[in-house]
Length: 108
Length: 119
Image 1 (cartoon, rainbow over the protein chains, first blue to last red):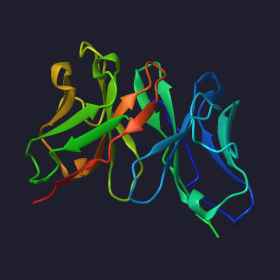
Image 2 (image 1 turned 45 degrees about the vertical axis):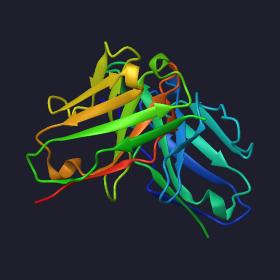
Image 3 (image 1 turned 60 degrees about the vertical axis):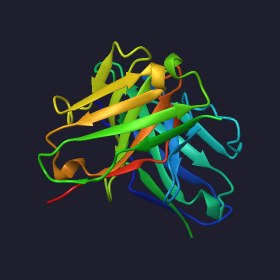
Image 4 (image 1 turned 180 degrees about the vertical axis):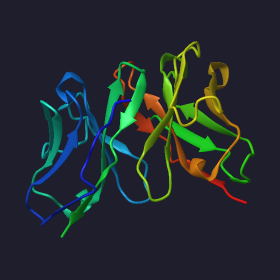
């Protein structure tokens, strides 16, 4: 089955840029989606189809996908960005949805 | 406004069974595939199951295949998850989520219902 690998944690100072990676074999051939889950809340999609933003998601949140790594970038990080972030793809071989292990973003 | 409300989570003994429900509103329920996703304590999100808009196609994670059954009743705007032969590894917050019309991601989520498998 397809595996997505994320770093367990990323720390960043307010106002700086956070980069969260999601690794997978030939992931650039897949459409990657990203979810934000704040403590005690349900997940919310922040990026879909590699780099599209749903309405209401600020432009400082962006995504990219190339080679074996997809990346979620959060610019001008704020305290409210502190959350767990998960990448997700569709495994066409099994028709399963696959989540990465999640990355805890800490704002210092 | 899309709303998904899960129910049915309780404390159950290992080997027991449980049925979760999810009531959908604010969208045309029978136009969309639906998912169950769980969040075990201290771990990450795990996709559990998917059902097509009309219920004809169902898919399961390997960890639950043969034990869980997803179903839906479009006349009641409701999604279900029948869970059998439960183990402590099945404990967690179970979310119902709406699929984004074939785009293979979950665009709306409920608040979850808690399942605890413990003796």
